[in-house]
Amino acid sequence: MNSNEKPKFMYSRWDIEQKNLLSQLWNDGKSYEDIAIAVNELIGRIANARGFDIHPVRTANAVAIQCEKFGFITKRKLIKWQKLQTKSRQSARRNNLFRAKKEVQSRDDHKCVICGNDNKLVFAHIIPFIETRQNTVIEAVTLCFHHHKHFDERCIRCVNKIFEYMLKKHSGYQDKYEIENLSPCRSRIVQKVS
Ligand SMILES: [Zn+2]
Ligand SMILES: [Zn+2]
Image (cartoon, rainbow, N blue to C red):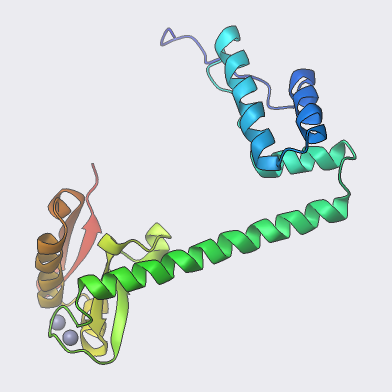
């Protein structure tokens, strides 16, 4: 594409080819997920052939909504399915947290990584959960109640100790994370901006 040419957008509405494919697969008893995959393949082929730079991507939810519009399913059934989807996403997230906690605890030998204490342990996010929305092992650490408070208050000694510990446990840690100094006695660990 020439740099001063505008990108070509493919319509986001469902055209007749996509609608026909959806109907056919619905009649074959395919799931919304499978239909979405097939429709996306079709869209990809058309976009390629007609030189569209940007094209729509169908989700299972978009397929379900379309099925309701066609009268294949009732509005009630659509809403019920959407609620179930939300529930299963939530439980997947809970499972992730559970798995991450177990892994972090065993990596840290069920002890505070700063003082070695083994009671009142806390699963501490090194990078705040609110920033990442993820529970990853490389971004969490086991701390005792006392050192968790220190870490939360950005105690520079605790931050340094945790950083050194993570360096030992995860190769390439220094490529992804660094210490940001906030004042002579306060700091925090942040993701490196590449
Ligand atoms: Zn401790
Ligand atoms: Zn401290």
